[in-house]
Image (cartoon, rainbow, N blue to C red):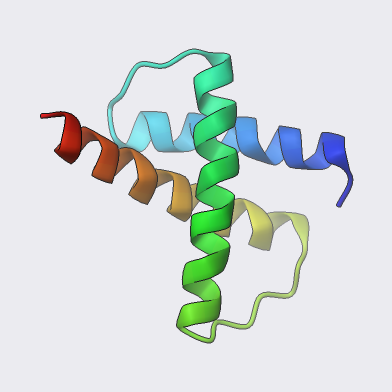
Length: 79
């Protein structure tokens, strides 16, 4: 996936994580959380030997789950 594809996935995954965790962030924070979440989600998928086809939906789910985990941990550390 190209550079712009990763940006779109990052923004959407960050937005989904923001809504699930009831956070309030801006566009750039959502992008950052989404991109970090994509790495965390990908690492966890490899750790648990999940076979991901690599399509847009698969990548979006992995990135969103990772972003939710990142925001959850961030909120627990911050509180």
